[in-house]
Amino acid sequence: MSRTIFFVSDGTGITSETIGKSLLTQFEGIDFRLVRVPFIDNSEKAIAARERVNRAAERDRERPIVINTLVNPHLSEIMSDCNGLVLDVFHTFVKQIEAELGVRRSPRVGISHGMSNLQSYEQRMGATNYALKHDDGADVNYQEADVILVGVSRSGKTPTCLYLALHYGIKAGNYPLTPDDLDALKLPKMLTPYKRKLFGLTIEPERLRQIREIRRPNSRYADARQVQREVEEAESLFRIHGLPSLNTTYASVEEIASKVLVSLGLERSML
Image (cartoon, rainbow, N blue to C red; front, side):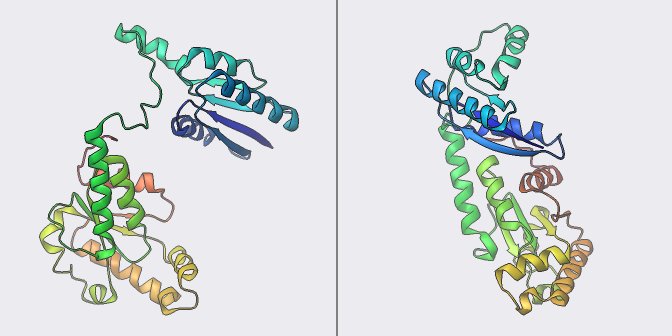
């Protein structure tokens, strides 16, 4: 079974896609074809988007599902006339929020993912630069770090640091545990002063072997015994030094970042 899903927005489409994908995770055994239709900001574009949905309905012989976050009521009305199931996010929730707050909404396009707050934008960009500068032990001066991720190579440190920076403005550095670090089962000297900022990432050895094999085929780096040893010693180091840690094998970068924030008490809203 397959269905086409349209994410229609007058902005980037990130909001409609995020909401839609969250809803779709509740349904198994269906092949969803996902189509993002962003920047629908006038009647001509809305009519073209509507026709696109109609063509998909005719091709599939099934109604497409349309997740709509158009702010402009006129454009939403155009989309509602398509041959699909239209789920209007704003229409569903805004009326109730207006009633609760006693305030009418002020329709504005592109606020969710636009540069509406220059200060928070600069904070995110500064944190991103920090993450890049302090990636993979390149710079071990972690005095300004909010968090330092530690783990063996390819356990998910870099993408998590960048996610924390881009979405939360968190200054995150990361340090790769080397065989020398693991042999001693001691925290590297450069990390000792920042122990309260440390968070360990681990991963199932077989999954790590697969990742490393893609990066460096037939190498000692990807050897099964070497990988097993590194993971076991890294986990021992976390236990010995009482570091909070997480197995990233089946966790998305969003889940990893959220658990890092909660574990270290870094209560930070998305910027």
